[in-house]
Length: 246
Image (cartoon, rainbow, N blue to C red; front, top):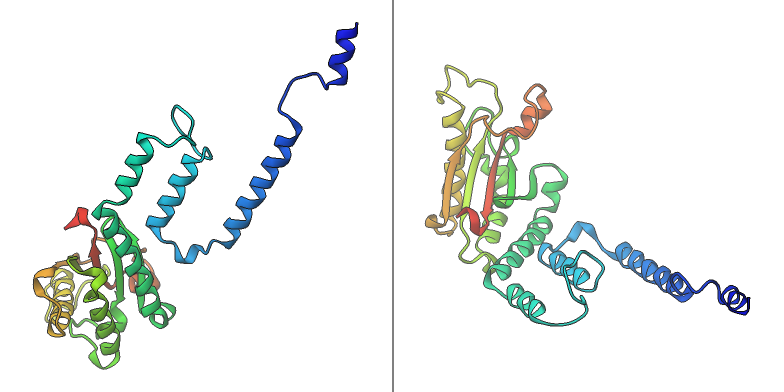
């Protein structure tokens, strides 16, 4: 009876100590605070991966075997991987995305330029309707010269030294004018890419750093059933290639 009474007075002797609940609440609140401070519009992809790795190493994510707070061979391996040249190049591409977003802020707002990333690398999209005359591969230089000069300065920046670029032309699915100069959308999309290439090389970017392609209407971003979708699909993509797509 004395032993049973002692167990009742001690709270049963099982479960986690009460201080651990308060500590967990504090950690959760701190995490929410720092998440609230995090600006998702300016994500550095390399730094994000480092943050995720750090959280995993602190025991806040999945880990396999051993005490996650103990430094050892795995920690040394992580430091070695993060210091490899390929990671530095990935960081430079992330920096280039931030610069491009700032450099083309007015054009992004007016939908003349779009900035995105995919498996190919960093993609700077020029809306064809803003850069070319209708059914023409001639660049509308009077209205777009300043934008193209800014694009050239970005591609020639030290952050992108040694990078390769691909210029990809795209059209909508509407057939070309039979009386016009283009037999099909293939020729039109390729000609637009080549003319952008000529402008960029004329202002001093090495021609050997470029690849050129014309895709006609084979890679749409939106439905070609509406005028808005077709306008979205008419574009020229300047792709700053990732290392896997050289």
